[in-house]
Image (cartoon, rainbow, N blue to C red; front, side, top):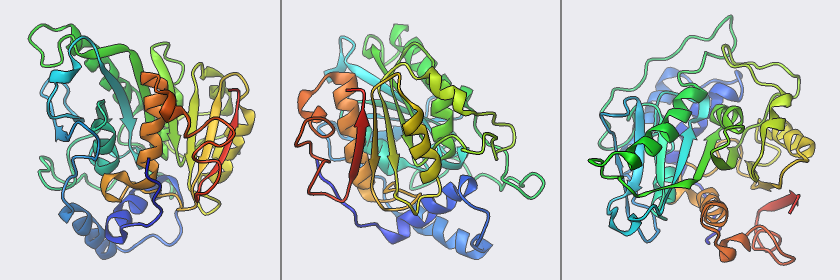
Length: 323
């Protein structure tokens, strides 16, 4: 695992902007700044990841409104060896390529990743940028995707592995399903955490609002939903400068029923999603999935043990309980 902190400034700009839908209403960039950031992000090539299975991005007519990240060669996954990760975007935006570097990195380690939203970003985008959504009453805009949209990725994958004329036929590991998301998408992951099919949940730069009411129109979340966790949970936060830091750390303190890790890297709310290969956060995410979906004891050493990889000698701060 490689731990990197440096940010690709042109790439991270759009990620931070998109995440601002769930972060803050202050100091919003101008329309020109937003456009320039979007154009800079879109010029950066898609990356295949650095794992053993180079990843591709595609859509499928059987699952409209979603983007799929998968190993380009599915041959090694016969016999049900391909785990599935369903993803919710920052800002709950309708752009399944808003986190394309991060998601392709995961796929390159042998995962099928399905993101809610259309292919609106980067080279090869098939859909126009989504129109701006007007805030409600001066607050945050309503989400463009829902937890049900995220869940649809799991449902589709399980249906495909049972369909004899699908390229995924017999390749999906039905017992290795995960859900994850960034910011508003992290709240979607928490909404879905009670699904009995899910083996682990990953919450990035997010947490349920401490004041007890959602600031996002049409999204109802409360701390009671933390009781739905029935599997190990990973929270990844961006340090005290992360707008979600108070909410996420409070969630961590409240969860007692399942093993939980809080991994904190001081890079702010945008994480390292804008870095090619997804940066340090993607590498930690892969290790978590390798541990919980594939049972890899080497990957587990990133998080557990006296001398775990994130315990010392890096910019990460690790908290854990229940193991």
